[in-house]
Amino acid sequence: MEHSQGTGAGLLLAGRYRLVESIGRGGMGRVWRAHDEVLHRVVAVKELTAGRFVAEADRLVLHARTQKEARAAARITHPGVVTVHDVLEHDARPWIVMQFVDGPSLADAVKEAGTIEPREAARVGLHVVGALRAAHAAGVLHRDVKPGNVLLARDGRVLITDFGIAAIEGDSTITRTGELVGSIDYLAPERVRGGDPGPASDLWSLGATLYTAVEGTSPFRRTSPISTMQAVVGEEPPPPAHAGPLAAVIVALLRKDPEQRPRADEAERMLLDAMEGRSPQTAQAYVPTQRMDLEPAVTTTGTPSGPATGTPSRPATGTPSGPAAGTPSGTPSGTATGPGPVPTAGSPLTPRTVEWPDPAGSGTEGFTPPPAFPAPGPRPAASAGKGRWRSAVLTAVLAAAVAGGAVFAVMQYGGGGGGGEPGPVASSGATPGPTADGRKGVAADEVPAGWKRVDDPAGFSLIVPEGWKRQVEDDNIDYTPDRGNHRLRISIDPSPDFDTPYAHLLDLEKTLKKRMDYQRVWLNQSTYRDHVKSALWEFTWTEKQNFPGPRHAIDRLYYADDGTEYAIYMTSPESSWDTTREQFDLVVQHWRAPGT
Image (cartoon, rainbow, N blue to C red; front, side):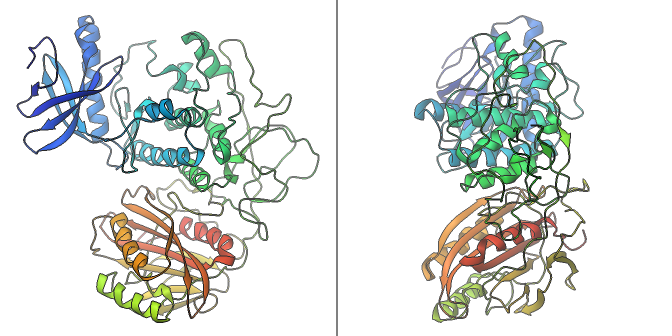
């Protein structure tokens, strides 16, 4: 064991944390894999090595930052944020004991592979956005989002770490006047100019991080810190060549003006589309392109309207986005398809160098509202079973389904009711627009043409397409236009059997795999209206009897603050899935749980 002037493998901290091996090093310190000899678990221990080699005044600042990092992380409850277990002092320096993540950082993964496949990068970004939303809701700005601070666990989880320079709401700053902290090529332009950072600053850094992931190089890194800062403030990045459907999302996040960037909830939906291989239409409203035609603006949802100025239009708050009626999902009429905008001569996307410092360009507000959404799309039938999702009930229902009953009795949770607004809504189709009234978890009051709001007797409120009728089946509440071929099911369980919705869905999936030709499209945890305990599940199967043929379904589960589980489920024949998927987005966006 080493003495107090150094550290090494074998050192025991606070009588319980035994250092095993160094697993990372940076300019401020290094991270050790360690063993907690009290709880017998592997942990990560962050050592502040810089504090040993600086003046006393600087040491105090570094120590304050370490304490602040621990406080910032401790304020956030989210599976995508590395958990802080303990803070201790050894060798007159603070040490942080954290959750150990078995896997490389995104920076390491890019270095090893060269580039990251766009859909995988979008998946990583989706997890990071969820973690940032939770941090921002807790009053914490990360301020150092970069590939090195994104950890890729070998079990598929994505976590963000290192809140060492986080800004905590209500805390006085510990940064000296004029000091610029963070990795320069991942700093948002407003921070480089000395402005106050906000949530949009973290999203800009995420955009630069995703660019690095898919292109293999930082978009603004130059030969010196000054030239790098000039590039961040005054130059557009080279158009991403390998980003596929993620290109437009990256360009949207990298807007110079923070007011012109998408919000976290919008970015979440864009990333979800990109992860599924779709070009996110809502991202196009943030992409500065130059129109080369003089035709009137297209009224397809998500397509900017207005003169051919090359200035992007920001979607009006509360306006749902998605393809117009009769237009294939993800390919609006009058809009070029492909991974992103193609810069033309004189386009704002053309890289340009300006005098230092250069103010960011501004865009104009305005957005063409979408046309009426199409009439209802199809849904699978539900069948037997009573009460909440119990395994015995599920088994009995599936037995009936395999014997010839409609398979989606299986989507029965029991009770009646449900709730939630879109977190990442998975699968094909466009996604809904942002909420309008600013209240957390409350969707816009504006009801799209062709839809109606229903205040259900069970206490919840939702919108459904005109012509859809309510029916109750074994304590589940359904809305359908055709006796179940197309179905919206709402279920409420006041005392669920599982710790999380994700665990619940994994359990259901095991049963479906055994009993039918189930195929997963998407199943993952995702923050939903600030509800961390939430999950989204999309899958397909072939129905044998009542509504025979290929079918598609999507299910949003979340736990409310009182522990009640809400499930919003929709299903239809595969042939009309694009329409059903758009309808699901609107239902979830406008959902109101009982008492809200």
